[in-house]
Length: 243
Image (cartoon, rainbow, N blue to C red; front, side, top):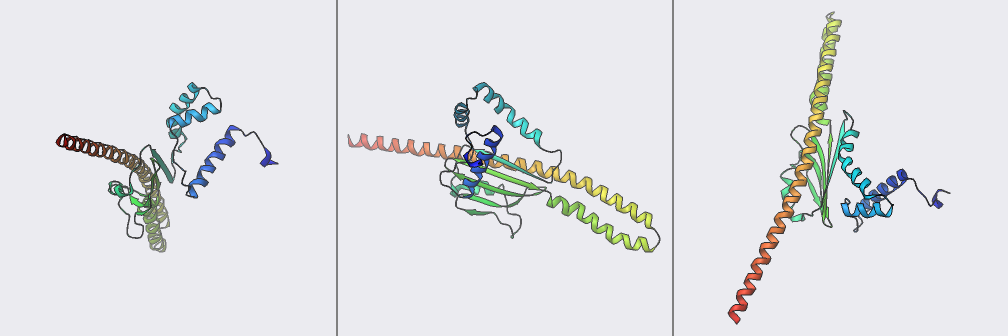
């Protein structure tokens, strides 16, 4: 029976671990922490008997391999960033300035330590999710081609329908067909270009949010250090006065 197996292939291990993480995340398990640090990865690799030099080589190749796996064109893309820093829910306003709500029907909402909503990237609509807890912050930006479709393919389709009837009735069928082909071709080029621009904008948005989290964490550390320094100085002055 499959449940009695004691040995899994490397491919099965990757799939099982990924699915287990998804299930734990969906269940809202308190012990769940997004991402894996280099130290944790090294420990896992050590348990599996992987030579550290090959692990480092795989880490170096990971970023370029991820970009290479992306298709030349796709209707939707997701960009994920995990930052080794936590941001307080009270400071989420530093993120909101980068993700304005896209209309009143899809506002950016905060539930506990998670921000979700739909935003405008400058040339596309994107779904955003930010979760910060247990010392780390995970950012997901999902780009789609909805806006590109609405401003290119859809108008071309409507224009083709509107012009087809009158031109056909007046005996200009070939002109109508030529117009439709031209309109659809131009719309397809515009759709492809705008979709790619939207994906690039979503990727930049994910990077900006990650940078904002790090900047907020650095500011919090500096503020904490200043507060502790002031407290120490105050205690020193009080002790001197008492002596």
